[in-house]
Length: 53
Image (cartoon, rainbow, N blue to C red; front, side):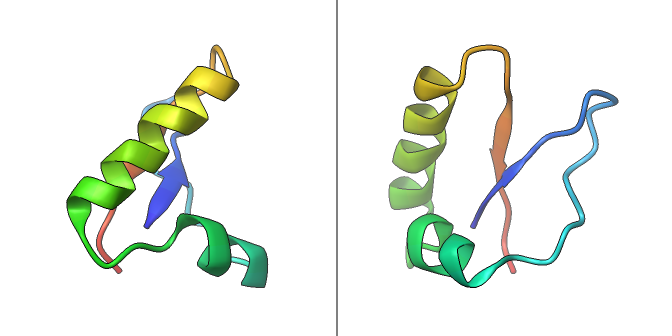
């Protein structure tokens, strides 16, 4: 799953929403990494990380 990174470098601990499960949950790390790169491109200044759930 792709999750946002807080300003202090920690991973966001907010529970995934229904929309997050539809958009940001992937079967493989490669697919999740592609989504992370896309989110960072679309949201300059924000950071995202790939985490296992």
